[in-house]
Image 1 (cartoon, rainbow, N blue to C red):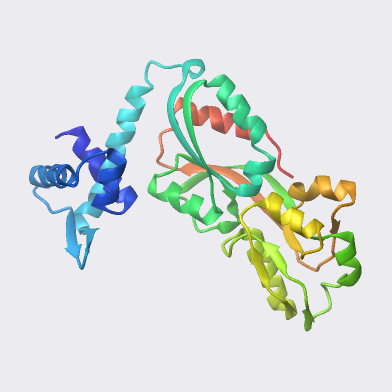
Image 2: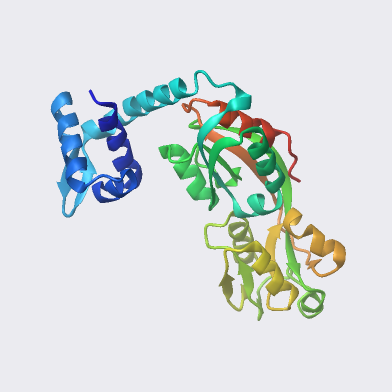
Length: 296
């Protein structure tokens, strides 16, 4: 059985289609089809079936995934067999939540590259739910995210990096006009400037607004935390963010905290990987460096 056939199968599963797998592996479509055909012939089982215009996994294909993962991980172990940590090389795929990446990880990433100069770090700023899901399916080696997304049960192994407060912030001028976010049953004509709907701290604040029957004017969705803060500082609206991400602005008096009655307004950051993932030297280095930090 050809190893490359197994790698092609895993790539199709990861990418979601034969066409995308061909692009990623730099193969022609016919090569992908041939390799899967050969694999199916060797296994005496159909791995994909066409439903409508899509090729989807058969039951046999679904059952094959953990076996293929085990083989690919074993090959990865062999590639690192003769390497010690100081000479670590290879690829590491890491997804990190935007606020954590922006405010806590630059120094860690610098040290990672210092200790593993031959490594290739594929780093992505991602939504925490997407990080969790990609750790499940193996497209990420490690994820740094807020464990408040939940839903990973015993499938992921995580190490806690710390717990941080989340605060409602505004410019001093905006707070003078709208200081009360505690009295219920109100309409407050100001926008919420925040990340996309699956942002963990956005979900906490929007739940609070629903419980209080507080209605804001509208929501401005932005991906960049620095841009969100700049707009809030310039009286455009309010935001609900991890305190560490606005601490400098609070210290300078550019932003102020508006009191709320959000119970336990804290979120916990973790670094995690799939429980069945082999911990390569690169992964161990990243885990060790992450474990040495404190998020609060």
